[in-house]
Length: 340
Image (cartoon, rainbow, N blue to C red; front, side):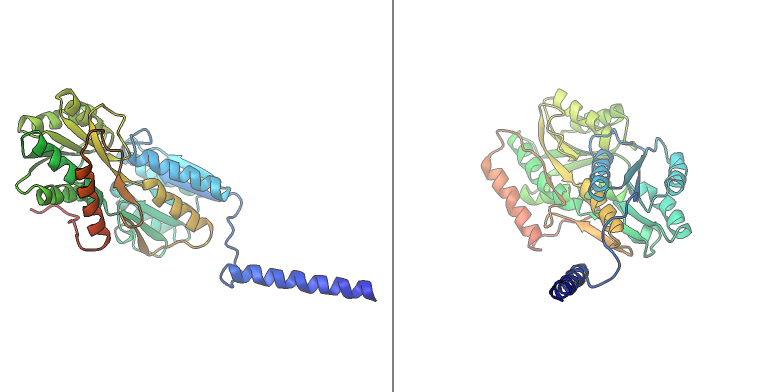
């Protein structure tokens, strides 16, 4: 009788522990643990995964998420826009439960597939869910890059002033909102910290060819720019190298590009790996935030600045950080779009 009593008590305790565990996950009988064999796909934009940061970091986020959930990562490279549709087909055929589009230019393709496959989760970097289908199975991974652009604009304006001028440049890739948001913040805060600062903005219309960005940078420097902010992905490496060759400063984009040349003032950082990681782990745990946008900004450390060149005065860094504090507090709001 005593043995039976202890067995009964043990069963009751086990049942209570099971109920407590269920309650800890929201009181639902639906498990939030990742399912074995969960497939997550990432379709690159035309720069591919060998760019210096934007796509490459998203692949880092995909692989990190796959490892976390015990799932499978399926990276799909786009060499041109004509690869978008075949890559989405491959993702669906491979059984992807979540498909990430690596950039703004993939929105039309994602819109088609998100509507055609309502049981698959989709997320897009650098665009709103509204532009990529607008359904409950679509999440936008957006970045307040105008905030990071503002911070590097502070240092650029001070450096140009130190060099005896008032002109800085921005080399954009393709003129799309994610590119212009960086430049808008850059312009706004450069003029704010050193009134009258002139910002030359030109575009290469390319995210890959370094020679095209080098030519644009040379044109801007020919018009007096002494600091060049590259917002053109892999193409922009050419702009940074051109600036260094002329004895001028470059500012990197998306990733910390401090090691690209010996004349990098700093970089405007966009943590695209974090957005992808969050989307995949959400989907795997049954908590996908479809029908909404995830915003990464200075406040949640989704954007920021990279390493700063030695010799930059502490007073400049303090000034830049005062702008950071004002932005986080909501007292300063750099524009996300360029004025006409």
